[in-house]
Image (cartoon, rainbow, N blue to C red):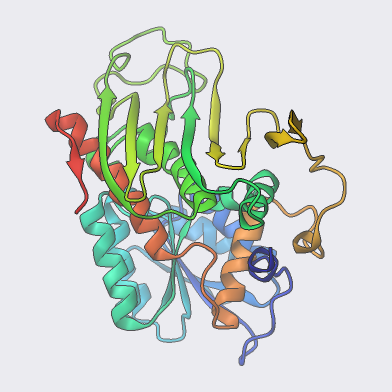
Length: 376
């Protein structure tokens, strides 16, 4: 529990200079809906540079979120030349995560990169190696760890409630909710569909609660079963059948080095009623836990089966103090800035995010080849 309490610091100590200076690379949806609004709430940071290949988006972001005198760029390499910038947030499509992050680390910046870490494990390894080589901090935007239910389940895991977790299910299932904006359905730009988009969150939560980052082998399947459908009933309108090149659903069976098994389920479009996104179920030698109806812990006490369901809306334990009401994105931003200011390990370690990328890449490779993929 002490680990959670320490990492969830809500008050960030003042840096040596007045404010940390942040550059935003990619001023699209994820930057506008998550990163920039969250950073705006933190007193000792300022966003001073904005970059986007569509210059108008960078100009709009600078006007809305920028400090006085903020600069705007169409080329991220020009932004990185500014030696006064301490931190860069990479909020671009997946294909460019790795080379922008590596360049930023080499330029002496700490980097928050939006999930997934990279388009595949090979590119993610380049990022991890660059962070080690430069000594700069690197973290990945898995903000779902900062949800109340996730923090509570992690606390239970740290307390030994579950015992040894040997089975888990990582779930990110949508019925007809394909994101039709941006480049989400473009396999070249994103590297995949729901598996790399929302399945990555469910897998990160699962590995984190298990504290298990050593995969042994996996088997995976992907489907393009509904890509060519028309009159789809999709939550965000019909998708363009000519542009929908990613899978619409993907599934994986993963065995870890210690013998633990993880089933990963992901979809944007599945004919399914019981849809759940970015949740996990864990089963251990002492008890189990899930997020199917809030947090539920199940086990046996005095020879009787029990199920407990904590009320996460009533008050909070110590690590919430001073940060009540903050959404996961703000908590993520505060924990990240705290790590930079106070020279602490980021809440999401790059080594952990790399393990997620390894498994995702393994599932895609298995689906493509029809073979088991071994990680060593």
